Length: 497
Image 1 (cartoon, rainbow, N blue to C red):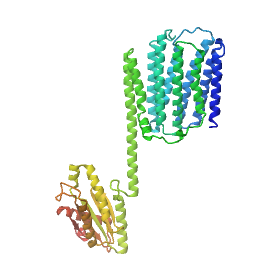
Image 2: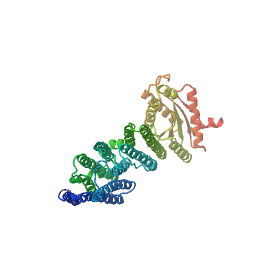
Image 3: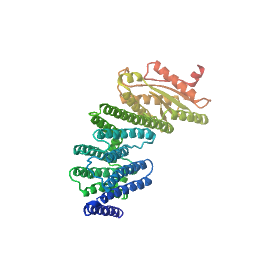
Image 4: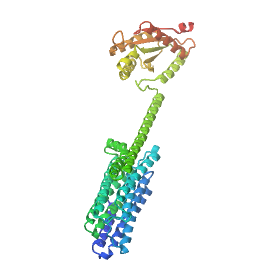
């Protein structure tokens, strides 16, 4: 608060000084009032350049655009002061050059509001937004100068129409700036759009009152309405950030919607202006409308492609992480990679300790028919339940269950002979039967499993591949002999074949 008061105090002191120049001084010194407006604008330019130097990354460009906008209005007022100082009679209700510079001011503001910060597509998006903003400025130029010559106009009706046109644009800028402030997710970006929104509302209210009163009465004190927004801008730049600027967004979902919908703002503005211009310049208006649709489609396509890329990257990272930690993405139990590692380790341990190790290969019966008739989402839900039932039915913490692939599971039983493996197989089949998962293609009307198993007794040299092959052949026999059963095949039988 101690820093804020001096800044606002200095701005208020300058405003009061301007008030003295605008009200108390003789009419022949009226250019001094315009000079005060210019000084306020120059102070705003310097403040924006200072903020740009302090800001990092692309936010610096936003401050440069705001400084450019202030510079354009300062040039317009310098021309007005020069005209008045030279004693040139002013009966021109709509001077062309200041109006043209005001149009360029609007283009700079449109660019600042529409600027986006996705570094992966920053260049293309910036180019498209620049094209749309320039097209809006060009349409304003066409619409305004279809009534004016380069010398302006002496008709009050033309001036009134132009004032309404700029009022509509200024209030649109203020609303859009406020929306961007609500949608900003980074502190520096939020600070800029907060200051911009306050400035745009002040720069809509003050100049709008100035222009409407000026159409009827040429009061010098009206210049106060022009300098006030720029003095407010200077005070905001040099004041501490409000608390909400540093805090995370209160409405994160709203912020995401605003950021996602930002491509539509410039396109809608160009489309509306194109429809207005088409009344007097049909082909130009139609071309502008088509450009707005093309610009919006391109921005939307870029946004969607970035979203797809981000989703694919996240899925790839998730899959890689799950593989690294050895978990299956669907069921949450160990995956094939973890199974291969565990089986290799247990076979080595069996060789050293001469203890048996058994392997069970498990297949869900008629699972393809289930997916075809009931759909993959239900099939996935069944696989999750089956995986958990198999894991929970294992009698020891050292027993290992994994998803081998598709609807196939595998269980490693350390220090377990063929008799113990047969008992575990019965427990596993019973656990699946207890789930009572309906399956019309199954003879029992419920989901069942087939199991093939084999045992390595540790007394002879063997490999995990041989053990897996034996259990897999036993599973094939179980399926050939009617399913919903378990079959055993020894390593000697595989070797004999």
